Length: 315
Image 1: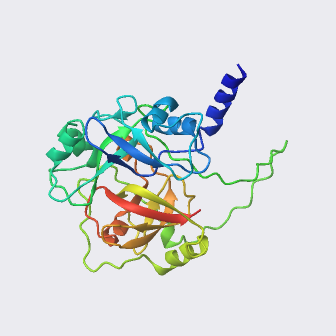
Image 2 (image 1 turned 90 degrees about the horizontal axis):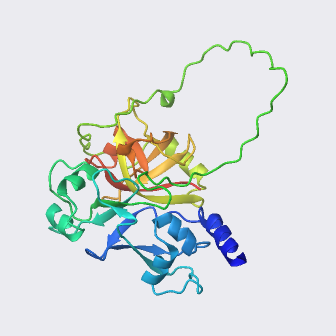
Image 3 (image 1 turned 45 degrees about the vertical axis):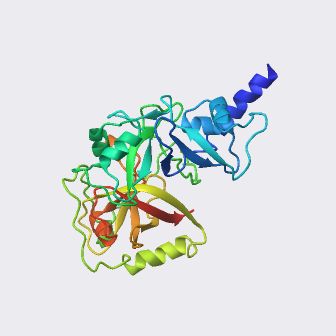
């Protein structure tokens, strides 16, 4: 009885200790598909079970490890992709699983290698209009359903910053005197988002590598010149903005005003974008780690509706 209670407590306390890795890349071929996970500090079979939607015993058995033995820091585990935790239905949601395209690989070959997933599903998930694939690009081939969140997009853990508790008084204070409005800074102009853009913006020739100098300087101040920065990898997309000369972003965990360095690993270009708000919770935004203003996306040299990127921002 005591052992059962301890197991339940351990399971609950470890549920928030791990999240599925930022970018899940599929390994193997049908029907033996899996993803690799490197064990981090504080993780155990129960926290991995919550993150990947598989019973702890199945994870242990797949890696030929005893539950009593525990996990070793830095050890690479195989997380099986089964019918219980992996969905390739058209309306699937959760944490996207990617395939990295090899040279001369076709969309049909990707479909055959991964459970004969319908081509229309792959086109829908990746916003493809045709069947052409680019070498070393990333293609979504299904979604991992985390335990307790099947059918929903798996949210990333939010950073929580301490805030002073509001003081409630019996009598509300008198209203402040009217304040004369002052001119707003250009960067505070409203941004209009287009959820389903008909086509991505065309890349601009000879685009500068980074955004305005002041955003780059702010990034250096916030991250102590990169020494106190956290990184993130995954898919992004864009929205229409009327801002001129500066780059803006939507991000789920970085506070408003945070400067994020966004890098396109395909060509090495980078921009510095200021966070305006969170990414709207819509099906079309499932799995995205960032949405950039159209001008920022042009500077990255991308002409895709969705693109793979690397982020760096204040830890």
